[in-house]
Structures are given as C-alpha cells and as structure tokens.
Image (tube, rainbow, N blue to C red):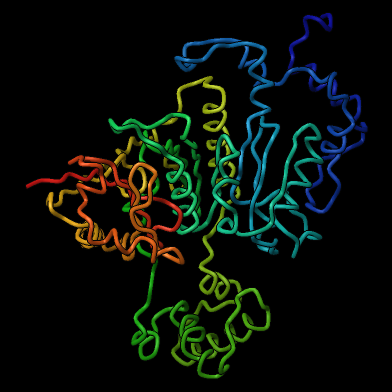
Length: 457
C-alpha cells in the first residue's frame, strides 16, 4: 500500500516508531524516563499526521450537534480556545491551557496522578503538571498558577472560554460557581445575554464512584441549584469522642480536637507538618489500645485529619475522559453536550447514568431575578430589612443598586448614601413600580442577587 493510501493511525504509529529506539520499553517505574514522551518531543510538528480529533472535526455525522459546521479551520479554533483547569490536571486536544492549584505534591499523589514523580514531592502541583504536559505535547501552551483561587480577581477568570473543575471540596466548587454566575447579565425580560455565559465542566471522584457535569450558568442548573445533592460532612459528637469511642476515626478526632489543644497550648495543628501528624497518630493509637479498638494507622490518621477522599486511578481516568469530551463538545459543537449530569459507579460491575437536573427558579446565584414585593410607600431601609428577612442565609448587610446606580453602598463610602435610607423605593426607581434591583452582600462573596422588585398598594 502506498503512503498516500495508508490509514492515518498507521501513519502516526510509523512516524513515532522512526524516532523511538527499537529496544525501548514502556517503564513500569514512575521515575524512569518515558521514551514515548521523548519521541513525541522530537517529532517534526508540521509533519505529524492529523489526529483523531482533527479527522472528526472535518466531517459531519448522525451524532453531531445541530450547529456543527465541519471544516479544516475548527482544529485551529479549538487550539485557540482558552481553558482554565482548576485543580492540577490537563485536557487533551486543547492548545492553550491554564492550570491553577494551591497544593504541593504529596507521596500519596503518585499512584493516581500520572504527571508526578517521586522527585516532585513537595513541589507545586500546577507548575509540575504544566511542565510535564509541555514535555509530552510541545505544541500545547500550558501556563501554571500556584496559588489560591480566591486570590484571583474576577477579571482574571473572564479571559477564559471554558473552566474545567477538578476540585476536592464543595467550598471551592461553590466559589468558582459564584464567580461565573456573577458574570451573567439579563435583559428586562429575564433573558440571559449569551456573551456573558462562562461554561463550567465539573468532575469528581470518590473511590469507585464519580460524576461529570456540564454547567451553563443561566441556562442549566448551576452548582448552587443542586447543593442538595451533597450530604453534610460527617461530624462526631464530642461526648462520643470523649466517653465512648467506637471507631478508629473517633480516636483520631479525639487526639486532634481534644488532646492537641490541651497538651500543645497555643500551637495550631498543621496536618502538613510530619511531626504534628505523628503526634496525633501516636496519641490516637494509645487511646485505641485503651478501648480495644483496631484500625488506627498513620495513613488513616492522615485521611481523617485531612478529610482525604479515597482515589482510584481508573475512576479518575474515566471521569477525566468524560470531562475532556464535554469540554471538546462545548468548544466545537461537534456533538450534543451532556444534559446535564453523569454519574458513574464501579463498585459492583460498571454502571453509568445521565440525569437531567432542573434549574432552581429561585436560585440566588443564577436566576434572572427573585420576585420580591414591598409596599409602594416602602423606603430603601424597609426594602433592605425585608429582603434580609426573606433570605437570611444569603444576606446580612446588603448593598443595593438599580440600573447601574448605587442606592446604598457599604464600606468607606457608606456615609454618602445614608440619606437614601429614608427615600421611597418608587422615587429611587424613577417612579417605576417594577424593576430589577441588584443586591450584593459579603455573605455571597463575589456574586450578586437579582431581585425583581414589585411595588404594590
């Protein structure tokens, strides 16, 4: 067969074979050099045959999205899409990826996070992941950001087309969700402006279980809409810990919560300090022996004190693949996107299912406006008091604006708006009896509550 007619996959294999030594073996040791990665870096970028993604984007099919227009230009567009990965990782097929993570590499990461090696322990996850990805895919531009997601300004998140989440806490997910929902703008009819939407692709695993979901703020359920999906974190009554411990976790929590402050006066427990962890482990082990309880190990002590979620590499790979595919769909519209939550269970066999969750029309994060009625004679102070009473979990000291004009602003400029407190809402709204008022509060951090105010009576 001529090279012109040879299948593209075979061409790719032959091209790689030309630069890989014939006696090379794929190393089982994570610390050994990877001949495939080295060969990839030596390949002539321009001479590489098109990959499977390139081929897919050039042709239509039964499963392509309704707005998909196959062409050779889509591949270049795909590589120009800016993707932010929150939590150290990587996305295949994208040429412009930013990674942000505040954590450093621990020995326990090495069995499931394949970009890391033993010599990387103690180094930044984001910086190491970016460097290793560039080594394997020289054409991919990966930028690392070592730090907290809360330290970035809102404008920094605006520059990305898609945000992929690989986080291990509800708080971090809720924060990114609030930032993206804060970008939303609605018209007077409550329709979202598509240019203000920042899509989110979220993935998470716990042991043999995992999920992937697509969040299109303003159109699909946001993270806050489905907070009820997540059970409350496990807590132990102090009386049980102190008097009748029944498990290894009880002994560990007792050592951390009761013995540590009692014996290490004024010293803050840091789970990342080996000496601190060893101290808690020994105290917990001694208490467990006293009550005839087994199961206190150093690794279990780490898991309880750090609230470590067990991770299985195969589960991580499946969920990561689902997230990559959904990100690709959003970027190219090559197929219909997930609608809108996929669960995976691998405990007894393999089971997966897609569920379409519904938006919460009263969501304080992504709704076009929460209906709120007050008297036509109500002052701004009356309105603020009533809206706080209606949403005490989200509001305590609100700032209020209408059509881009501040009606009341907390902080150093608060004195300038005191007179508005006694002004009637109907006057502040220019004589209108209905309107969209934006309420901000420190409880909601960087997002806003949209309130559709109706003045009656």
